[in-house]
Length: 311
Picture (cartoon, rainbow, N blue to C red):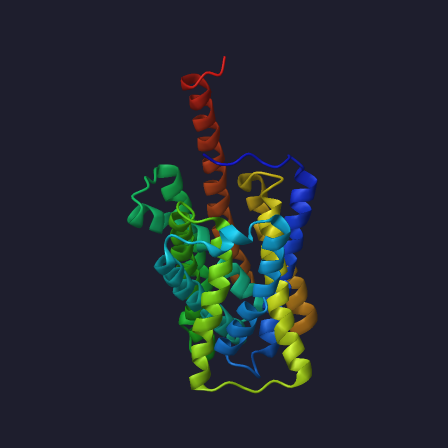
């Protein structure tokens, strides 16, 4: 049974969620700015390493450090680390090769792939409404990546970037399914802590393929990537204490506004109409899923009130 909210404070929840989304977008921009100098594996290492003290401090403050260190499925965290680290590395590769708004838009397909994988792996039923939503979302993805997959004037690096981000999005779908299974036996604090640890160790292995020694200023920026990501994760997690996930989910799409502004100001990038059209279809598919889940949640709550009377 889901835990009740600490308190229902929607304004605070929205503020925390928007703050987290802005920080995630800013972190992606920092990664993109550093991508000409540092390989993706090295940036994943710093992103994960410097998130660890933030997470530990947060767990200490909440009194959950003990839960964050206990696990009943250690190998489950290893596989979650492999999937999550791979997704992060592929996304960082895509950021080096594609405009920031485009990477952001393709990433919106994660809930669509999660829904498909939940049906295949977990046996969850997908009815016609959600099948239509999935189809709409996949059409949007195809529209977004199609210009990168063909045409005489398209650069091969852009094609590689689109494929990397698409595979990363699929991998994040696997991650979401895996987390659903992990939190059945382990505390969410353990999932957050052990992912940062395993991602740090796994990304460190890429040093054998060659890293770039950072100068002091660059080291500080790389550390800022990890700190920003860690704080953003804490903010988004905390936001769910004050409002339901279904209420906060639509705000995920404000990252497109952040990405467009940052992309234009920092990298002189502008999204194409094709990309925006595809993104709109993906977002529409996700919104249908969100609304359907909200409806099903209300129906389940009503059924419980009838079958489990309190009076």
